Image 1 (tube, helix red, strand yellow):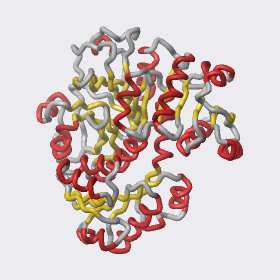
Image 2 (cartoon, helix red, strand yellow):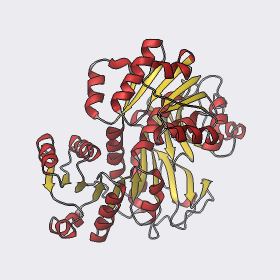
Image 3 (cartoon, rainbow, N blue to C red):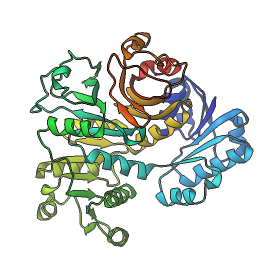
Length: 444
């Protein structure tokens, strides 16, 4: 399938890199240097031009395209691109936007503007922050099979009771699968004999209760609720995060320095305490007992500011810090200096868009460790290598780097074991090394 990606920023580049091996990808961007760089870096056709012009889209092969993805940094341009593509034919269109109001208008207008699917970056980021906040030590949390299955990635601390144990010793849960460990630059597919070390990042898949139980145990606590939430910065992401917590029954605090923005948020968020002040003022943070917060979310406009606020919160003794970062290259740096979780809105958006480009059997995907691996949900068809076979036998026909994490069968969770027989129609949640993803997708 020909896929046209308009906008070669972090989102467009990530999408193009993910699709280059399985689709005929054309990337359109206005910047000539970016286009030249993509030509050498990826196996795609890169074109310099304005994607809002029909002439440029036709040059990119619009007549033969099955999918057009508009992911520039301008909401209106993305809507125009999708409208032009839709007016030219029956191409499926995806628009990336930042403003939730535009998403709400599109949703309420039954797919207006010629957009088949709209992704709101700020809302997705806020939802990601909320999911992660409920599990201590979690770096990533995703739901599969309509909420029946949860995937989470945890960092193992030096005092964690599972540090030094084998996976078999640590696995005391009825419906949990240890999928993999990330140790420095290595990915280790988990087996019963795999030793868990301090500093490892462990990916588990299972029922929400089992994943929560594992989170409780690795940090020696049974209080996972982030009751006291402080959000720093009333950027659109900060605002949406406060709103997300409100909608789930929380009463967060929101710190914003700008008077007009603080007042606007106070009027729009009835269950949020909005405080007008500079969040980099350590005396203010101490006076307002920010040190008692269960989680501090840094959502200011600027990576450096978010790093400073997170470090201040850490110094005050805050349990968990989450920072929003625009530059993905900073993610590892943030976590190295002690920030618990660094979330990149563009990466979150790319992940949401990519799942729409997969074949019809792929229900949902989650990228792990910046796309080093993926967790995918697939409906098993009669021709699948898994259909009608025991997992232990079927996996012999799969490449290394694949773990069957969970099975949803008729709305019921089945914990996979070697003797479990997979049936056609089952929804299987699979951990896959990105290097073998295409091969696995073809046979599974």
